[in-house]
Length: 376
Image 1 (cartoon, rainbow, N blue to C red):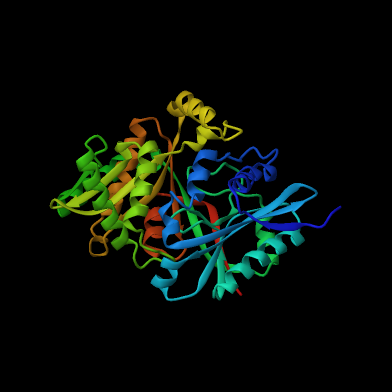
Image 2 (cartoon, rainbow, N blue to C red; image 1 turned 45 degrees about the vertical axis):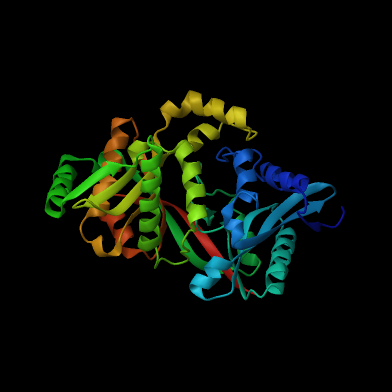
């Protein structure tokens, strides 16, 4: 057996190898949802993804005897470091055979690249930022991931921890059973909250271009204000938010894209996505045509919504606006045959959100994702 070599990704052909090698690590795993190759290319494209206008990334492949046995990305998010006044580097897109030596080589290579550029710590996984897919699945391996959430073999946690990383923060995914909180009692409570605080809910306008752009600006302003004090949060640039909005517009359903207003003033918003992973899990090679086919033929059978974003401006958080949005999403889902929701991800120390999901919405943590950190 030859020695394992680490090679930097320097060409488009290398980048395609980086993308496609992911399949190597999930053979026989019934819960693996193959990514859409087209989407991966767009995410990594430094000329199209505005994230790379303020950040930098180097991808690496681990090869042995002509076979790719691991991969990793080393990332510097300069906006993060400016916001939090630190020198954190990140790792992402980690995949690896069940071999500690290979994992150590990958992490050492990423660490060296980051350290040469002045970073003092490395945190991850983020792919490539906290505004994208992030966290390592450490609990809840019995079902596939939902849309835009991560998935990995169970042994990855051991590889990361034995490479010297320690837990920095856990992220929770809650499962919500619609019939457990879409009740007459909940309906009465929500109606009282609406009337008392003059709350109305409207859908984002997807059909009118001018109004859609106006709504997107409203969402961006609320997002950047409502999440500002959250751990690891970095404001999106205008280009990043528009880039994300254009992507989500292709898969979002306006019935689950809601702006909540108090006396006509936007104070929060919620976005839930139909779990299209229930379709894409059948698209074994990640191709575009196969993905479209499975989406068209299976979309009507989707049974779960992922509540991807739900937030309220700080000064309105005790009005019950969040409960109204959860109820509204659940009710709209029930009307379309949706039986469950996933609220993800939620910071482990977000006391208010965790309490509301547990006590008001009867939610249960069913998956846990972990972000790790290590000093360089």
